Length: 249
Image 1 (spheres, rainbow, N blue to C red):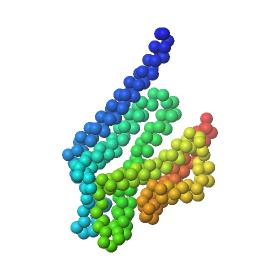
Image 2 (tube, one colour; image 1 turned 120 degrees about the vertical axis):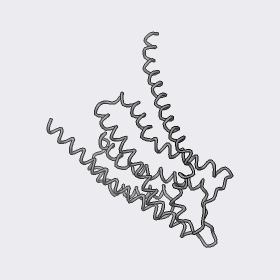
Image 3 (cartoon, rainbow, N blue to C red; image 1 turned 90 degrees about the vertical axis):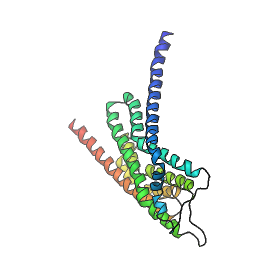
Image 4 (cartoon, one colour; image 1 turned 180 degrees about the horizontal axis):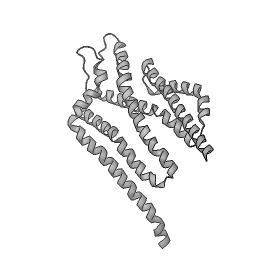
């Protein structure tokens, strides 16, 4: 009986630690959200900027649902709060798993977390600053005669957030390549041999994850291919450093 209690104590302590980390992460998101609530309207105006600039002169967005003008900006503020709090959330995840990692693994995980966060932000920024203006300008020009281009604010938010997520994930390609090579799943040279298939896959993925227009598909596929080369460069460099270290030993 005593042995069972001793075995259950580490498990219970891990559950308590997990609960505390989740509470801290959720608290950070809620704190940022409360700070953003007074500016929810301004945040949505900034968020809708690429679309509003492509509307015809005098054009406006609409709210189909009666409560849309009230709830949609708050939903967006919460999404932005989560995005801002991601570094702290990942830090809590890191703090929870770090005690169980070896020293070599810790040296990999921390740069991995930082690079993952930065690349996700870069993907979102690229979508907002480069892809959205071109894409919405294309949509506006393709509007049939007699049809008013007046998007709904709720539909726009869902559409834009899904694209933000798609571009954020797509920009994680270098991290994925470096991680796979570091854990020994595949070598850098084998990754290089798969380049033609990756390029084809990038365009297929862009076709599935973006609207059915050539601009947004190319704007996703091309950066992903360039990021593939960046990830391959770092994977080769790290493998070379490992070989040099082994020779010195």
